Structures are given as structure tokens and as C-alpha cells.
Image (tube, rainbow, N blue to C red; front, side, top):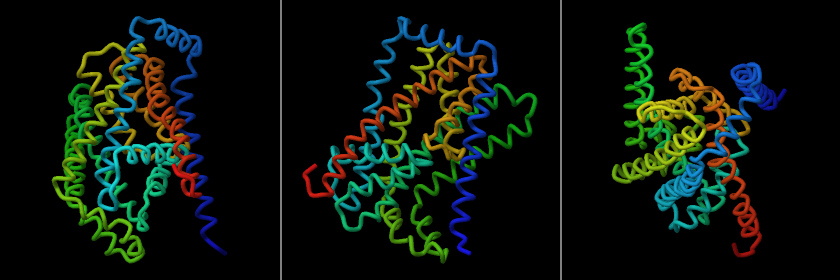
Length: 329
């Protein structure tokens, strides 16, 4: 009996179960309270009629800036394979965003960017894409660790000093380990080469070891720039939906939310939708904020920064397909 279909079935079953569990938790957390929908409708109407609706314009302005940082990263990453203009890099990011939107953990992002390359060795771009995503993850972990540190010190240190100290050391260890790996990507390539079943993939990831420390630093700074653009969008939406906190609480809550979203595997067909919402409601709930207000801001962030750009990216996907048939794109 061929085991591959069985494995695919088990993987699909696991994904469906996790997705259903996430939806169930969201339902239990939000929709079991009486008059929830009436309350949510009132929150949305209040936000629409608020004098702060101009914040929505600022959030919209930050959307192309956010993805502009990612495009610049891809331009720098892709230059190891072939020269890429900033315009083409931006288009590649949009194509990858659209394809990644409908795949778990945004795996379609790899295919989208690879298809945009003209090089015959386009599959070697997989390593470059991985380094770019890893840089973004490192930025999320570094800032997110500081955000979680705020919650540990404020809510758990007095009652659970031993556990809190262990978590602090764990966050420090994770941050340090990820920075070491990022700046020693050759070691990751060596690990792949050392594992026999993975050796055939070395050619696709070997480019990871070609980036200098200066290039990695520049990529990390761009990742931090994109991170803070995303963070600012979330804070602006929280303010719009009536969440009132001091600056440190805003930054810590959002940073902690992004951290938890990044370290919890996402299997939803709608990207990270669900994980971020649960994380945000938990952390901002500790700060005494209403769950529906936080959920409204989080869903708006996903809609404006992921769903809408993904729809726009469909245009570039169409042009990509025409280009492959010989029609100029």
C-alpha cells in the first residue's frame, strides 16, 4: 500500500481539526455572550461615526509602505540570482502575497516569487525567500519578547517568580539563538547537507550562505521597518475602535500578539486569521479591554493589510500568466 496518500490524509485531517478548534475557541470567546452581535454592531457604528476616522486613512497609507519594505528586501535578496528592479520586486511580492493568501503558512509566497524570476536557476530562490522570511521572524521575536516581558513583569512576576524567570530566560535564549542562526546561515546549509534525505535540497538553499553580515544587517533593519509599520497600523485601528491605553501598553500588547501569532503554527486557509485574534484578545484582555473592540481592530488589520492587497495582487498574477504565454507583461 502506498503510504503517501495516507500521510496526506492524516495531514489534511490534522489541519481541519486545528482549524475547527480555532474557530470553536473564537466562538466560545466571543459569541457566547448575550447580545454580542448587537454590541459588535454598535462598536462598528461608533467607529464609523467617530471623529477619529482619519486614522483609517493613515492605516491605508501605511499599506503600500509596509509591503514596500518587503519589496526592497526581496530586491536585495534576489540580486544574488539576477538583477531585479524595485518595481519588479514589488510585483513579485504582490504575486507571492496573492498565492500565499490561499495556502497554509503562506507557502504560496515561495511559488509566486519564484515564477517572477527569469533565471533558469529560479528554484535556487527558495533559500533567498527563506532568509527574508526568517529575518522578519527574527524582528518579530526580538520586539515581541520585549512586549511579553512587560506582561510577565506586570501580571505574573509576583505570583509566579520562578516560572516567570524561566520564561524570561527562554525568550532570551530564543532571541539569541535566532540571531546567531541568521548571521551564520552557512551553518543551516551545512545541516541540510549533513542530513542524507535532505541533501538533494542543498542546491535550492545554498544561496543562504552567500549573504554577508552587512547584507543581513540591512535586511534585518528593513524587516524592523516593516514590523513597525504593521505595529503602527494595529495601534491606529485599536484607537479607532475605542481601545484606550498608554503608549507602552499599546506597543507591548501588539508586539506580544505578533510574537504569539508567529510562533504558533498556522494551518488555516486564510493565512494567520484566528491565531492573531485569540492572542490579541487574551493579551489586551489582561489590560482590561473589551474583546469585541480588540477583535474588530484585529480583523480590520487582516482585511486591510492582507485580504485587500491579495485581491490587488490578482491583477499581477493574471499578467504573470500572460507573460509566460509570450504576451509582454
